Length: 213
Ligand SMILES: CC(C)(COP(=O)(O)OP(=O)(O)OC[C@H]1O[C@@H](n2cnc3c(N)ncnc32)[C@H](O)[C@@H]1OP(=O)(O)O)[C@@H](O)C(=O)NCCC(=O)NCCS
Image (tube, rainbow, N blue to C red):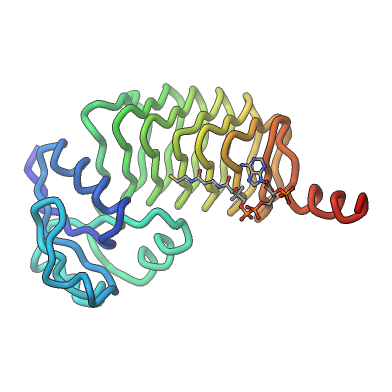
């Protein structure tokens, strides 16, 4: 494959992880773009932090990727900026060859994606995420060190925090948050936050706590 020269939007911790995936894949980094003036002129992962996101141009890179962990921010930039988005996959991960992965998505070290799964655009499968057979992962989702069991599905913008698990065939609605350590046994409503084992809605837990006191 031709070596790609990839610009990164963002210059924080996740951007540095994205840079490491790019370099491990044999591609090169064109530079970072971030709306943080105090960072301009410095370098990260051996590449310059060039300037604001508005200065990114396809004249200086072959592709771009959004290295920002917040799902809403990735959506905002993806919709605003017209670039050739790179999909990057760490060589120490396993993605079944038939699995489609949308543009702009990053598969970090240690992640595993099994046959029949589908991964959307601008998705983050973070360190050691696992997506089992026939799972669906919507655009702008972020799976931290977490696990989706066979046939589970998560919609657009879902954030699965550290060490959480979604059981087989369970569905998590758009822009929901699954808290760290949660075990999700039942479908989750869009825009809700669930925590615990079994996972329960945080707003319900809060109103229950208010009634008790
Ligand atoms: C679920 C989460 C998003 C909720 O954040 P929040 O809305 O700020 O919630 P709060 O911290 O105000 O906590 C509210 C209540 O829920 C409880 N709670 C929060 N997160 C919890 C979790 N993961 N599991 C169980 N209970 C949790 C708190 O103890 C608190 O209970 P209390 O009111 O009885 O004291 C957050 O706690 C979380 O899990 N973040 C994950 C971070 C992460 O994994 N990042 C990965 C980076 S790659």
